[in-house]
Image (cartoon, rainbow, N blue to C red):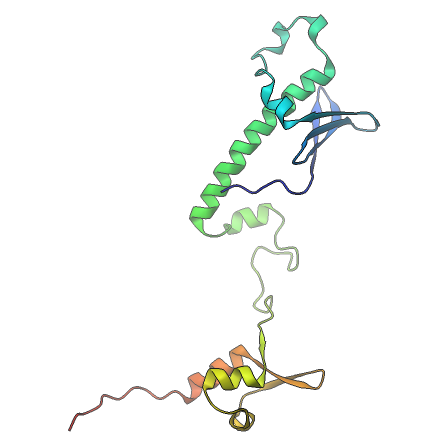
Length: 182
């Protein structure tokens, strides 16, 4: 499974020590020399229809070398290689089930926590209304109000943490006893 390109993807590349900004969109690729205003734009159809780049660019006659064509050829090659690598990585991560900690650190860690491991409090659990708690416990709302379950007041309303309801159930649960048939 691959990720569709819905937003513009911008990267900087260097070709012969000259910086270029490459922007990939669903329509095609735009290449701009850093600091310049004119851009080279090609659709994906143009890129895929172009012949593969020669193995040795020195073998191409000097008259046929155009900076834009050479750069475009290198970008097309890099895009094909990147697409294959992303596909392989996506498949491997899908099979693994989660991002490994080492990869998370390489990506810069968690944006909120700043570390690869998330803190215990990173997730705000859903709050339940009194009616939802009553439905879960299959009792009336009047009975829920009398139960020793901690509440969270929000804008004058009473809410219950799912973990508090779970803890209450665990604390009141009795071990199963074998029944004897008479």
